[in-house]
Image 1 (cartoon, one colour):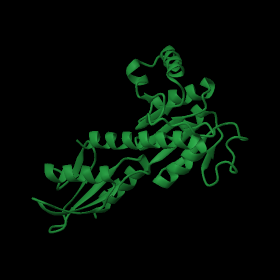
Image 2: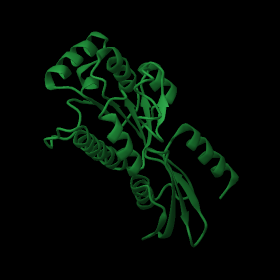
Image 3: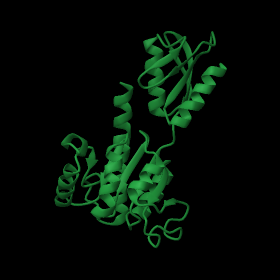
Amino acid sequence: MKTSMLDQILRDQEAKTPVALATELATGDQALIYYDSATGSLANNPEIVAAARQAIQDDKNGTVKLDAGEIYFQTFNPPLRMLIVGAVHIAQPLSRMASVVGYDVTVVDPRQSFASPERFPGISLNHEWPDDGLRELDIDRRTAVVTLTHDPKLDDPALGVALRSDAFYIGSLGSRGTHAGRTERLKGEGFTEAEISRIKGPVGLNIGAISPAEIAVSILGEVTDCLHAKEKKAAA
């Protein structure tokens, strides 16, 4: 790998930009391929570019046999993250489940008696006010944001930050009536209907979930569905 390509990959990792390094095994020619652009000697081959974007989507390294020859793809994706606003009962199973699936999870709640290591063992905790905490955590396109406090004083500021970000998923706990009220408040803050429509509310898949653990399953299922839908769209 050329030093210039390595330097670019390091910059991309710092910027949390997904990229794949494509290497033609017969010649050693290489390209850096992104969702929306490509650079390098292989960048003009649509077949290679499409396969590289598929590798980014699948988060998978490996050799693929193409008409252009055998191409090795090495992907450099930023980690998947889930930022949970509200250290409530649902957040406990959700944080554990998301961690098992492979998310770096942070629970954001200024109430330290709720967001405690005893209630969330092994989970990162942020005790800032939700909007400050989310800004500090630098939301990117590999980040899911879930607000669970059911308190507009905590959820609304967090949603405002999330809606201005590249988060691939934004969900908020509450009934349809609660979400209607939330929508009106966000409109009052200047958000458009199109922007507000990014919020999944009520949060989670409609699977008849009742207990905190079941609701956590429904949320993680919806997050997973949105993740793959987002990546397929970006790779198209």
